[in-house]
Length: 457
Ligand code: HEM
Image (cartoon, rainbow, N blue to C red):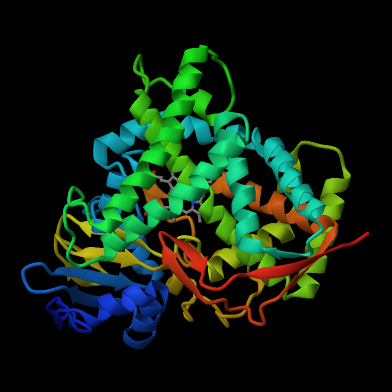
């Protein structure tokens, strides 16, 4: 006899928390709130935020299966970057490949992909090495042995990306981006997670500040593009030259489109890597034996005269440190999407209009996938360790919208650690591996992360 079991539909998810308390808690500390809810309520949490009529439903997702559903090719079309945070990002930072959707994204990707092939990125490794060496030497010249790792690494990664973009690490550009980017990022996130979003045409103090920051950022890029066009120079290998020369059939990118891509690379490409390096140096500064192993590896790899891309490929231990750091401190701790057609997430039906927030911060601490998840242990990423769930480690996202700059970032990060540690001992001045953090698009420490540097023969 065969028995037929009727398919079961899971009961609707209960709504967790009130309409206002979570918003206040998120304002206080977004990372803390999302982790706390996950620990108390599990991997799929449904909230409804804001007053009736203006409310929005937000699901917080903390399981790799949920990430696979939202990001991977087969279902990704149900979850698009039109949620409030990405809508704000597009408004304030331009409509480059980071925020584009559908056909427009496919078109932009055809222009941008060739700029980020492995071969193209390996071509930037030498200039990365030069910029890193220059920033390290600059620090040595100050005679200061205590350094704010966050500020130092921001300077380093901004110089690298500016040089890769424009061919020269122009101080003026570096300074203007450093000044304006945090203001715009603050505007994007505060408006993106806020409940009552007034149109950006309403000149609230935040909007006014945001506009000032945005015109400075746009101005920097537009001036450089105009100067490059006016010079008539062609054939350069920096990212800007490649974008200006890029063709899809007969068509090229307009100046405004080039500006928007340049902005994406400037912004997506420096804070994220700086965050990873800040926490990597902090953790190494607390784990002396790992640091000694990284130093030994760096000395071996840098002793031979060869291209920096070959050096970067020869630093497996250093790379494992970067990967483990990005597990504990993912530079992009959350990513969000708007649901645009009926779908399911881990068996729960989700309807159009819901915002889903994936939390790599939680996924990277998930006890089903990580033993002792709070322990810093780079051996998890040693060569030969079997692959885990594809989305258990996802600092660069996944699926078609995964980070285009992943190889760039990893080459830069391992080279930076190798150059810093080769002749220096780093001692962290914080007495915990677990630095208090929050997030405005990217993760940041809420206390200064300082370390002592000592030269080692
Ligand atoms: C440690 C460094 C980095 C981290 C952690 C990181 C993280 C991410 C993540 C998580 C996404 C996917 C966002 C989503 O799905 O919503 C992304 C996308 C992207 N990243 Fe990165 N990123 C890093 C460095 C870079 C660099 C160096 C560049 C370029 C110079 C870059 C350019 C981009 C672009 C253009 C996208 C959008 C891709 C698309 O939508 O097709 N990123 N990044």
